[in-house]
Amino acid sequence: KRTGIPRQIVSDNGTDLNGGVKLFQQQHEGVAHVHDLAHQAANVLKQRRKHDQRWSEFVAKLATAGAQVRQTREAHLCPPTMRPKARFMNLAPMVRFANRLLRLLDSRGASARAEACYGWLREYRDCLTNWTSEQIVVEVALTHIRTRGLDCATATKLDAAWSELSLTAGASEVAARLRTAVRVEGLQAEPGEKLVASTEVLESVFGKLKRLEGSYSGDDFTGLSLAVGAFLGESSEEQVREALESVPKKEAESWAKKLFGPTVQMVRRLFVTTPESVPNPG
Image 1 (cartoon, helix red, strand yellow):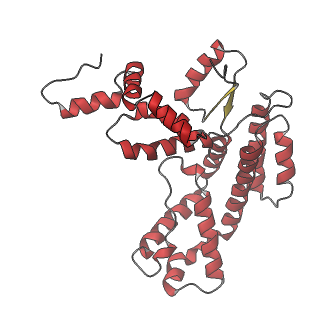
Image 2: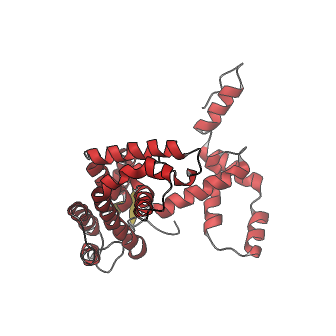
Image 3: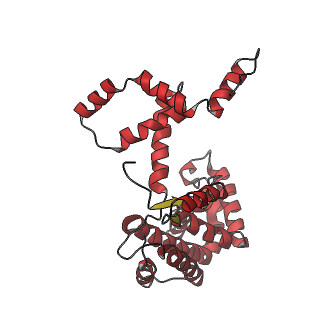
């Protein structure tokens, strides 16, 4: 009621969200749905890597070498761990690590064990050059989107930024895919309007909320979502005191329970801790 209908929705384009987004757009005309560019870039890299035999070999050899140095004096040369989820959104640390390791080998400053475990990396020099170039293309695009938003001219601006780089053939293909994605998404922007094309701020908010949950592990996470407005806004000590006095914690908890009802987690906790009876979620 205070802010009006949202201008846009930004998502990772997941199938679990798209149905709800379409329903919302049907009910509210003029709402744009922008696919987060970081996820689009990760999909582009995923499609390129899954058919790249050299990449699969590289990842496997890196993991083997890391296990060989883990309990040694060269333990600091263990490679970064690939995340089980959203791994193609986090390739930069691994590529950066490999490049630094290659420079160490080239400088002849590596120990005998490091040489024995990572000497094979020289065979991937050309591949690393290409993977690094592809990663730079992605990072240039994401930096622009994060700081300048998305509009009809974004694709042209990215072309200008990419033109200053020395791109490999693979990186040029990545740039072409991202250019098409940005152009399609940018068409949703009105003249003079900037749209958001990243969910990272929202993901950061949830990360902060989960850290806050650690201090209130006995309470329900759903009700704790009320705290988002408190830690995102700028409030004076006087405003905080007034808020705490006008809305006591018990009143907020009562409101949350009435609005949300029993959550799945709450019912499950009751179920596993009360063997004599099965709680009724209704």
